[in-house]
Length: 322
Ligand SMILES: NC(=O)c1ccc[n+]([C@@H]2O[C@H](COP(=O)([O-])OP(=O)(O)OC[C@H]3O[C@@H](n4cnc5c(N)ncnc54)[C@H](OP(=O)(O)O)[C@@H]3O)[C@@H](O)[C@H]2O)c1
Image 1 (cartoon, protein in one colour):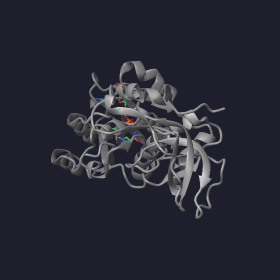
Image 2 (cartoon, helix red, strand yellow):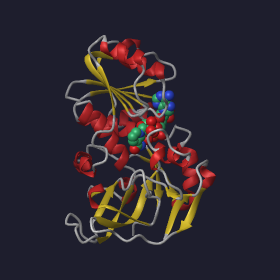
Image 3 (cartoon, protein in one colour):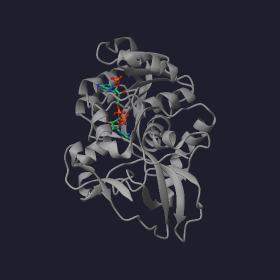
Image 4 (cartoon, helix red, strand yellow):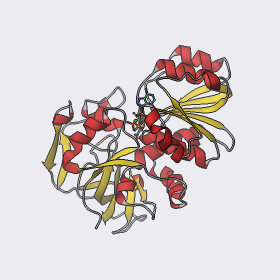
């Protein structure tokens, strides 16, 4: 079978389409025939050699890719939750051997049944971003009806789902993006859009219950402005995992009894996709796929993702649906 792997850390030119043996599932694993995967910032961060959290886990040669949507081809002897032919999606083996591959094995617990009303391309775009956005908006942010939520990076993979989740929870949603994405944000449920390059956040001082930072750019000034817009007792949830938060930020938050949190809790559990599955099946949330590349062109997909201006997701198609 074919898989995109790296044999050395570095740029997109390190990505090779290798011929590798089809894996065999262990007792608690499933073999998935993969139809689609997608590109996440973690993929190019891993390709470059990882960050302080990921580096110890990365062993070469390494298969890339977080997300997978496909069909269960075989089940291990202890697997009870799936049968051959089930359509599943999840985040297998992170941060180990990845999903840019024609087949993969992973623990059955890392997959759930796909929403019944979407394609593999749509399902392959969702798992890691949906887990992250759900963790930020629902688990940590605890967004409630009538609350005001500010989402940085609202047009991206995580942000475009966070906007829809916050709207589905009944919030008033404000998203930041470049102006060409304002209509897109409003079509997906944002009540207001702010150009992060030009507009200050002065009008929002003390008016926001939850700030969800889903920007791929670490920006200290934007974090301080986030503290400023929060209400007493509000929360700043951050997808960027640099830790600890700067003292200037924690002091600003403490002055109004607000706090900061990193996404993370529950991210590893595919069962946390159940809320996403329900909202998609109810027609309240849609996958946002802006571009599809064939697996062989994964390096070009990485180059595009590294511009940090992708709208929604880039999907890698591994095989045709029919
Ligand atoms: N994907 C995951 O599974 C996952 C999991 C955990 C954590 N994270 C982290 O979450 C963050 C977002 O990930 P992602 O997959 O959503 O990234 P992404 O899709 O690559 O983000 C692209 C978006 O970021 C926006 N953007 C670029 N510069 C910005 C800035 N200075 N301020 C605000 N927005 C800006 C762009 O908006 P415009 O084009 O409109 O300018 C674009 O829509 C990353 O730090 C990532 O490491 C991601």
